Amino acid sequence: MTRFARGFVIFCVVIALWEGLYRLGLINPLLIGAPSLIASAALKDGGTFLLASRVTAFEIVVATAIAWVGGVSLGVIVGGSIRSTMVFSPIFSAMIAVPLVVLYPVIVAWTGIGPTSKIVYGAAAGFFPIALAAASGVSAIDRRYADMARALGASRGQILLQVMTRLALPTILSGLRVGTSLVIISVVQSEMLSAVNGLGFWISYYRSLFDVGHVYFGILLVLLMAAAANAVLTQVERRFRWVKG
Amino acid sequence: MTENAQATAEVVSAQNISRIFGEGTSGFQALDNISLSIREGQFVSVVGPSGCGKSTLMQIIGGLDAPTRGEVRIDGEPITGPRPDKIGVVFQEALLLPWKTAAENIEFPLSLSGVPPAKRRARAMELLDLVGLVDFAGRFPHELSGGMKQRVAIARGLVRNPRLLLMDEPFGALDEQTRTRMWEELLRVQERSHATILFITHSLVEAVYLADEVLVMASRPGRIVERIVVGLPRPRSLDMLGSERLGKLRNQIWHLIAEPQETNQETRP
Image (cartoon, rainbow over all chains, first blue to last red):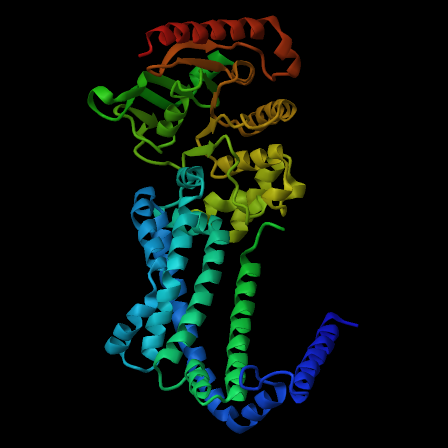
């Protein structure tokens, strides 16, 4: 039996057990959903959730792109000099510790209740851990590599991009992992706080109606999105992993 | 050999270079009034105790650091920054880029200056042949031994056909056996490429065995205390390691290095 087939069988067994427990009345449907409830929610309001997924996915993709590009760029530039690393790394660390959620009402006041506020909030959450990882990654690289590249004719930009950033990639990639999950968490969370659409919004809405099937369907879609993001990150890591093991 | 070398052009000349780190009374004088001259095809070693400013000297000649006073010229032009077209550098660590193969690492200096890939590859293969690693062109650094990595680094240093190959304790991190094999390798490479080499080391035997001329440095402040013409015949062979001439030179250098250091220790604040 292939790995996939085995996984599928296990999945079916778990679903059957779950549904069985629900039918036997052993789990409270107000607290824990059941496969049949989720399926009926999907049939009834699949279209709404599909549109909401598109909104959320759009917000996550844009916020992630901003956090990746901005965080890596700033982090690499900061990490390129020991002095700026000493100045900025504590700032990045401090910003990670700030509960950004307290700023969310302010962000909504500035950018409205639509996707823009979610993008700003999500990007801000992902930006600092990525910048910190990039800065500490680059600054931790043996300076002799920079000397070597300079002596062999590399310009400052070439040293930073073609040598130091590449050497720091393992650290930068782990920063991307942390940052990306923070973006996803923050986008969904902000949709729950105040929004007009998006998965977080509908999960929150149906929770207030005690409609467990719809809530679980929304959760399932968020999980699928997180899995997709994880698959993308794994591909990126595979692409840049040069040393085995 | 030395008489021969004297007839050729001067590649590097340093005139009264001094390097002081910091300022005023707290300044530390790393190099004091160093002058040297290296002629085409010559192999010159610089030997001295650790902390004598050998590496500072290397940084200055390589254009990575600037002297406080004096100047270094290569082919008559003052060195004001790295001159990758004229000077190839090999460090103590191979410092190969782990995501590049041996061939790609050798090509790296050429790729920086925009040489087309086909031309780069051809040149890298020539050099892999020179250092005896043609079969390892596609291997990554983590698949190579320490000696092989250093040979790739030497090839990388030679890839732009520099006027001077500057080597900063290149075999310092290798074990005794590998190091001895690398001596053979380097002598063979020099014989075939006619490279002019400035070789910095703290190993007295290595300094004498490889070079035409040994510059002996002392520390605090770093200065050249003696210039020794080796005068061993070429090609060198490992038998010479036990020769009387080499032993005598080694002892002479040892006394030059050891004595001033003892007096320094007494006067150290």
